Amino acid sequence: MPRRLLPAVDQALAQAAIGDQRLRRLPTITGVNATVAIGLLSAIGDIERFPNPEKLVSYFGLNPAVYQSGPTPARHGHVGRILP
Image 1 (spheres, rainbow, N blue to C red):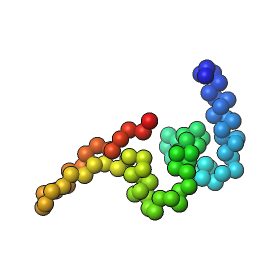
Image 2: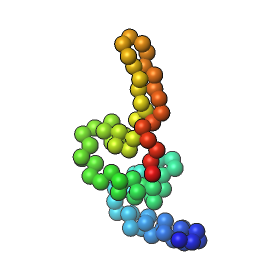
Image 3: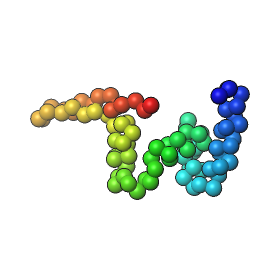
């Protein structure tokens, strides 16, 4: 798709999502525009399938690895994976 069409696509997605409360709240997060919000909600699906926020974070692989053995302090590693 030519780059000159991207603003038109962004505007069309924003217009289509204007009635969705979830899509009006997500863009209040820095770096999240209508396109990103639609992508997130598409990937999440029904939010009720996640019993708690930690499960949602884990689903996206954004929880850091924790290494701990016995009484030693925990070490935190990298996030589980990079989103495609």
